[in-house]
Image (cartoon, rainbow, N blue to C red; front, side, top):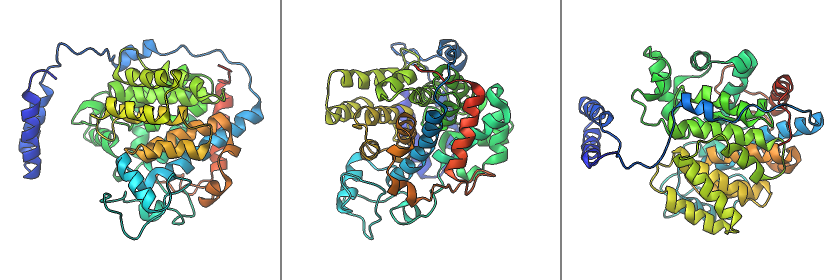
Length: 419
């Protein structure tokens, strides 16, 4: 943003918020929207229409071993559900707070679900509100979470509309399937805008300060499940979905995650899957810069600690729910996870920030890479391999049923290729 005007406005906004002066906040918002971008801005971040022309071309298909694909679909769902729960109680904590808590709980390095302490250690002011029902020994079904709800919504969209789904279709299904109170940040703003009569793409921008946060990224996986080996097709569906609530790096986060998941089904190497995801992010964007930086460190043989330090130094300015810093954490965990499920998930959680969302994406990719057997049996058993959900028609569904349904979508699409 150009000149120092926004800083003084933000200070005024803080004071107005403290006084619950909503008219004043609305006026400040209007002033902020009128501020121009610094002419020295060096990033190139295309809008959704231009991005569509930059995404990879859908790939010609060739058959994969059906049994292998079925196992990877099952693994992806299992990995997403288990890993999401491993990160849920410490969501929103800093890396230092996560380590402090887990050390106090005798669970550092993390080996499974987060234990619940009767008293928080010094240096940790709170746990996530889900901790009482998402901590070790506190659940018999996978706890409800928006990271899982959105994957179910994506599955429903593809089963109902196929690849011809439109952003308008998605908007209508949100209102039909999800309670408003179970949406957050950009999704809640877009949902509210829909109810007020706005239509996409205005739903993504009107009074939606969260439009480059992680909400779209966590909605991507079902599109990758439906198009294994075809990151271009998965990313196009993700773009159709993301433009309802996000812009710029918020949109790129979802196209990246969809391409990453799609790529994971046809390789055993995280670096190959990450390259598939990177092909779905526009060059010149801030997200591309961070992803390329992480990949460059891996190529140079940097240690996990060095990668984490680099990421903290280059993304520390972002909100803890932003797309860019959390995508970097996902990439680091996959590249330095040592091909072990617990180590990989633990490293995504140890970085703090949006721990449950990051762990869910990492777990999904890990399961798609290595199959169901790579996820420890004791972790799978703890949640009974079934989900608690706020999505209409999905509460209590078994993971095996979800895997069968996404496999049918993949078989219907024919997108079964080896990268």
